[in-house]
Image (cartoon, rainbow, N blue to C red):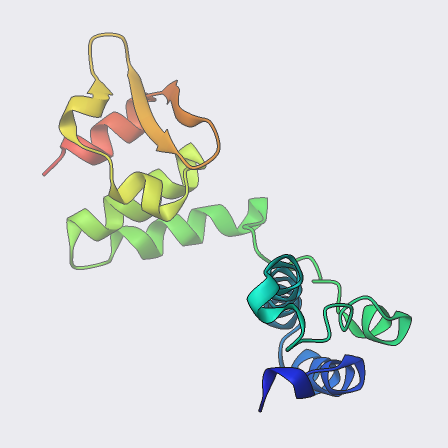
Length: 152
C-alpha cells in the first residue's frame, strides 16, 4: 500500500481487524504507526506524501483497543504447595531453582537470567538485579533463595 493511501478510513478498518485478534499488539502497532506519521509530518520530504492526521480522527480513536489486564496470572495460596512440589520434580535443578527464585524474588525472567555470581552478596544477604526501570535494585537474599541457588 502506498503511504498516501493510508488515511483514517483504512486505519480504522485495519484496527478493527487487528483488535479482533489481539488487543495489546493492535494498540502497540497503532502507537507505532501514529509516531511514524507524526515523524512524517515533521519531515518536509514525506509531509506531502502522507495523511499526517490519519490517526487523529474520532473514528480511528474509538477503534484503538485498550489492553485488558491479565487474569489468573498469579498463584493462589492453596496452589503454592503443589507448585513447589511440581517444580522440585523438574529433572534439571537449575531450572527448578530459577523458577523458584522468580516466584520468591518477584524479579522479571530476564533480570534473573542476567544475574551473575558477583551480583549476590552472601555476607549481607542481598541480590543486585539489573532493573529495566531504575537501572538496578537491591533485594534481600532470603535463606530459601540462597539455598536454592547454591544447592547444586
